[in-house]
Length: 163
Image: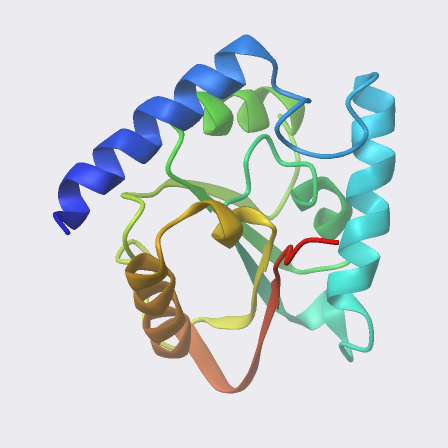
């Protein structure tokens, strides 16, 4: 598998999807932006449940899309980092979350977390994004998550496995 070619295809595919309809691909709250944000809060609570002292921590989302879960994280964490292969999604996230303190959006290459410093993050999470990428790239993200996590850091991943 040529992973650089896969990365390029993922970027083009997600850019196209987000340009077409930024809500449909992000959640079940696709009727309105308000519904999208509500589902983001709901889903973030599932991921972030039982994490102590979040206001002192840095959290990173792999596959942040337009920022649906980042918005919920911003009210709870000291620093929030979102990374996504889609530059169109990140641009939309920047528009939605403009003026928020503690937010960093990173254009990802769809292969790793190379733009994130070693041992700089307390929590790495991904909600459904890893379901749409090939297994070898998921493996790379797992290794990269280990690299960027501080000692005692948490990795929380959500996958859809069907009915």
